[in-house]
Image 1 (cartoon, rainbow, N blue to C red):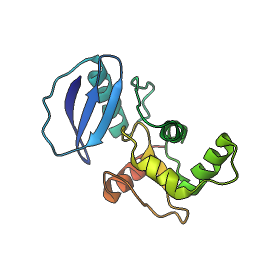
Image 2: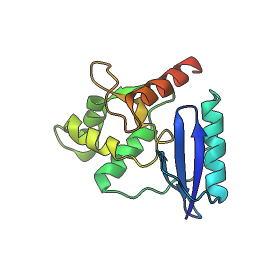
Image 3: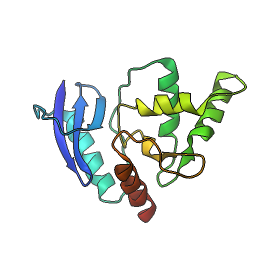
Length: 155
């Protein structure tokens, strides 16, 4: 397992990857060992492009571990286009349809979104409250606001 520090415009991030895929990308002030592998390098390149205001034309390989529900929600997050937002309620409606049930709670979706292990690349920052409010971002609302502004400016 390799871990590398990445200094972004909104704070230090930790890139964690095994030999095959990215396993975590999170905001952290904790120290890490700073070991590299090809996956940490490609993730760093992806982040450099993203923070320069461009849309990366590649995706680091990703390995996710979670409940079937969380995996489904995280896959839905990956489908949110750059520079756009959706509400927790929108995702809940889509999830209910996929599961063949009448209704899904926005809070259940929020719980899964909040456990997203790969910040930015799996764009949980693009999920907002039904009233357009910037709610719930593990990195902090100011980071969410920065990321949304970055994407709108360069869309």
